[in-house]
Length: 256
Image (cartoon, rainbow, N blue to C red; front, side, top):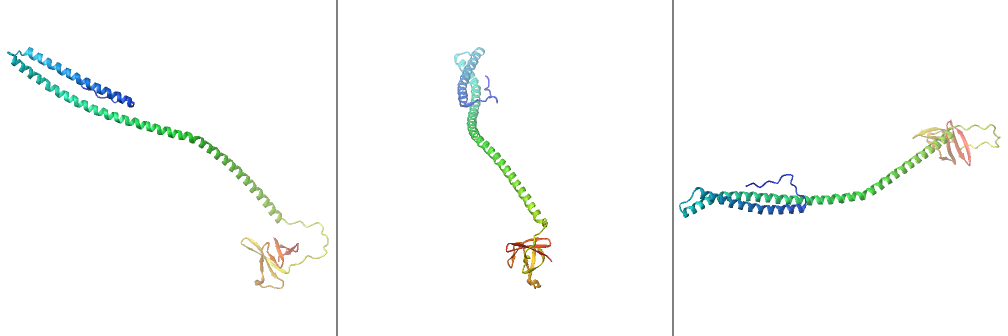
């Protein structure tokens, strides 16, 4: 009589159909094993009875029957114990196989759910790929436009800086005296105040003026370019002289 074999670790049924198939096989195997155990028990009992009759012939029929019953009982009790152990082991194996089937079904369900989730994520990624490609192209286009605009603005700033420097150089350069001057019919007008000097405040030059004949510091007023005094507008400060405009005429005044 052979013991029931354990399932090897490599025995891995796949799918609900495979689980049902193995459950059916286990049921059929269980019934076959019980029939085999019964057949073995009957055969063993028959062998024991035959041996008892051949080895120990009873003097009478009653003694022979008692001897046979005793031999049968002694043979059947171990068989029943073995059968009980086998059935217990079989029940344990059946429970383990049932648990394995349930775990396998749960794992298959999880695999299906994971596969469905992966497929959904993959579909979303496939939908996002064209949008990401479009955004990348748009960013590249905007970056190119921004670079062009920055380059153009830098060129404009450079041009304006060059023009400003040129204007400053032209203003700072002394004007050449004319080769010949026509005789003036009348002397240029003089401002009704005196220029006392030039002061620098806050990085800007100012011209000090005071009314004619007054020498008090309280009477001195500081004029910046664009300021007016008695209708005379200070238009420029050039080194040792300043320029005032009055009634459309420019008048140079020497700084003392």
